[in-house]
Length: 267
Image 1 (cartoon, rainbow, N blue to C red):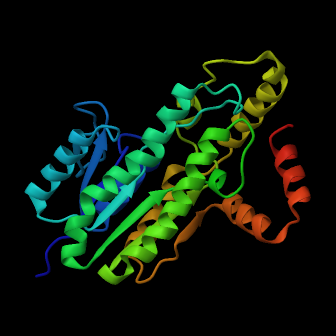
Image 2: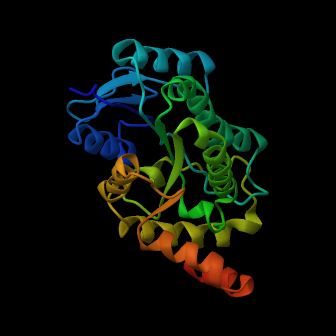
């Protein structure tokens, strides 16, 4: 009988991470989920571990615990992250450092922790949760968009680097999804009154877009497809919005694309 495959999903106590962990477990993988809070509940059948992706020791301890229990990690889903709803100018440097520390460097820490084992086995899959905001820059998400563009580029580079070792790196790129992302999104530390009208229009627009967005399970289905497909693409859209963003980026004149984005977000 083949050895059971193991998956590690960060940010699995809610939203896309929780739905992905649940679906991977139903596919027969032994799944470990993580949360920043000790004792957080996850989906049935998923072993939850405490993890702070910004802390080297926490990352090593978490990955070490999974390897101690299973001897392998076949799939890593880098889902942990947060957003900032602020213009670039009014985003404090502390906020900018914090969002890159979680969204980009946290994902990189996780990759570096699991890759030695994947390279030794000459197999593995890393799925980085990106965003439509990593395809087209979104106003009043300047730093969030920057982190997601970084994840897209990092994934493309690492996919080529790791191809000789049988490790595939992919992104899943959701559009607006009904999670607690909007509630957890941070407002500017240093608000500038000149941006109030634009920021308020943006917030009103995204409230409607989140309310009518995909379910986390819709995104989780794409995650499972990427985790199990023989040869998944490097970037994998989840939902019509990111398909449109990809087409718009490739085919629409830049001035027209900017106008579409402005109109979508009330600018």
